[in-house]
Amino acid sequence: MTNTSTERIRELNRLQREYYATGATRGIAFRKSMLRKLLAAIKEWEKPLYEALWTDLHKSEQEAFLTEVSLVTGEIRNHLRHVSRWARTRCKPTPMQMLPSRSRIVTEPLGSALIIAPWNYPFQLLINPLVGAISAGCTALLKPSPYVPNVSRVIEEMIKATFDERYIAVVQGNRDVNAALLEQRWDIIFFTGSPSLGRIVMAGASKNLTPVVLELGGKSPCFVTADADIKLAAKRLAWGKALNAGQTCIAPDYVLIDKSIRDEFVDEYFRQVHSLLGEDPQQTEHFVRLVNDKAFERVKSYIDGPDVSGTVRGGRTDPATRYIEPTVVLDPAPDSAVMTNEIFGPVLPVCTYESLDEAIAFVNGREKPLALYFFGKPSDGRDVVRRTSSGGACINDTIMHIVNEKVPFGGVGNSGMGHYHGKLSFDAFTHERAVITTPRRIDMPFRYMPYKLYKLFRRILG
Image (tube, rainbow, N blue to C red):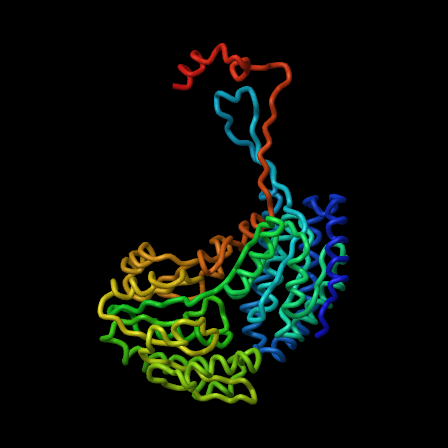
């Protein structure tokens, strides 16, 4: 795919800034109209999108609908229902010393938005933030991933056929294009990707003090205690790790398990993998492939490379199709590659612990993850959540916190900053502006020098 030129990027940035300055994007009727156009476009382009996802990632239509399209269309419908209320001016109480002034909060769009998305959920993670930008009244320049060229092409064609480029447009290319984009001035940058790239985005944004939302990743731990429902834990972990072949920012990255149930859990995990994907997962249409050869070689190195640590169970691979079967690595060294890098593949390290306190200390000694999972008594799960920090968490489940649009999705620390989904997507692209209105005919004297009523005013306020 050809890189968009720097000149073209500058032109689109200028066009969108000029268009935003006209005020055309601010009206609620316009925002709703554009959301409806986006919804209609997704329906029209759904089949080409599924075909592109299959070509680039071996992602089935069913998984594509559940993890990509349905999340976006649900988000659009939610914004259509509520954006009028979210954008409404809100009156706020005014303290006595400010009377008879009135206080309000007025919402306004941040302006010109840049949205950069990764390859693992290339449609959802680009278009979901766009819903927030449209809802808030911003313009948007979209940058999909070059690692999924067919999906990126379909998205570009869909956007071009649906919107004026002065309002919403797509640019294509590699990291050189990202660098050119970050040289421009934006009013908000929304980036989803790795922590290392997030630092580059934040450094670029700092030149113009541009606000950022960073949806990053990390090694999301899963606790399995001795009193967990082993079959349920294995089933939900197998599903969470098999989804998109583990190429999910909130995939369970490694398991911390009570040593007394480790072997029973691992046996059940593979039973559940085979229940989901068949005895040979390579033959099912419902198991995604690694995105490219580089990703394949990286994940493969965790199970058959020169620095492999721990006992590997599973591990069959096929470089021709970039297939790696669901694999478990038992008790790898804490400083091994599989335990220090975000795996982003269908490999699951399983580490034992003697006490839950030991497991909690292990998690707290590392960077804050995007997600945390716990299987066991809910009361113990709530205690683990209280004693740790993560972007989100599930007790006796995995992944599902991303589905509820009424709770925030986002990271903390190394796993990101800012939140979105539902109203928080609207908020991410919105500035809340304080407006104080003071009558002209009444002018309280206490605030003026030389403060003649200071003693009385102080007694009143206590």
